[in-house]
Figure 1 (cartoon, rainbow, N blue to C red):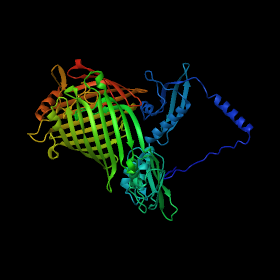
Figure 2 (figure 1 turned 90 degrees about the horizontal axis):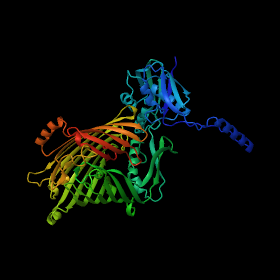
Figure 3 (figure 1 turned 30 degrees about the vertical axis):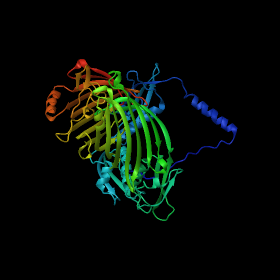
Length: 636
């Protein structure tokens, strides 16, 4: 009977290689000659292409599942994979690890290949799966600070399921971090089990002593005042070491925007006992920068309730990261936005100009309270008369509270003056908005730019006028939920649901102006209609968008990579705009019959600035009014 013991601990042992000393030039020349001869047979200008990949002995796992693990791929359309022996060895190793993750702890994988006359290669993996190991019991010994139930949850060990040693190794870091938050820096865990069909696993835990912080040392400061760094720390000398507070401090230091690198590490102290010094390594950024930032963007609609518009943005930004060495960041940004929709709806969306001056500080008196004061000017088209731009300028203050890395609450006060050529001089003097806004966002995504797994929830709320004054009195609430589910072969199913509601606060309040209503249509909402024009009216020979007080929007996509930089998305969108609850009920009935729905496909091309989408969308009830358009980046 064989007992397996494996150890996981805080430090990894280091190894060394012995390199023979070359004592004479002649010996060096001889070594070079031998190396050249040995490599000569491996160097070839002929490229071999993978043709077929077969598996033998895979009784439990399907060939399709196993092919997903491999880097070498069979040809698909014009996409093929170049063969080399190193990749073959790595794929055999990946297959073995994959089987181990499924509970086949004694699996054996043997690889072989055959070259063909057309420089193709057929690959065969011979697999001896062995017995599948099921976790029958778990015994935890030595734990005093964390309960056994919590340890099993952190390690994701479940009785009656295959023993996944790969996942156990990955999840160990979660348990280790938990112990490090309790000051147990020398925590160690050993796994003991007897290989076989039924596994009785024993976890031997050595928690180690409580470790305290001795000295705090900063490395890398040249021009920045140490006060701006030290005040961001959530730990002090003499306290029990807490990895969570160290991680939080690291993030807060980075949020000052004064440093391009922040790294906090414990180091053994010379002090007698269980003490560590905390070393804070930083790399300062230049105090001032002039940045030119071109790229793809979701351009905010000219209506505060409209969906964003796909476009290209060019921005110039001047940054002073500590104005007058006060720790206050100053930013001056000017941008020009070119909506892509203008390509198919010529003249409908002119160029948009934006500029703002902002001052940001992470502290208010002695309290950490990140806040920003911003002065802004926006010149954008007015939706009902696109040839008459609307000008907004004003002041905004926003504050931020972070509950965790994923959850953020942001609130703000805003004063805005609004002007348009079709307003009378008296209206231009009076038209202003004063608003209070709150925004909560929880985001648990694997990638913020191109997410493939996770979900997010955003709730936006705003009250305009009321006790704040101004010429408008209304409220607005907007819910946005997104879910991304990874599938096989790199495919992703993406889903979004948005629900919005706005209305006047009082019966005698002015009607909500057109530039604040909800609008749908375009590359980021309903792709079967042009931007902001899901509902339209015609007057004076012009087709103009119609907004609503209630918004419902659903988007679903199946994102399929087809090789290299190319991909295909299959999508279905659905939306409703209404001005009252009774009209909403009527539109829901029409919605069930297909009104407000579209379907289609889009070709995606990955670029350094983000994906470009060329899509073809067809409304369910009006297939003759299909839309071909561009979008950047993804719709959501």
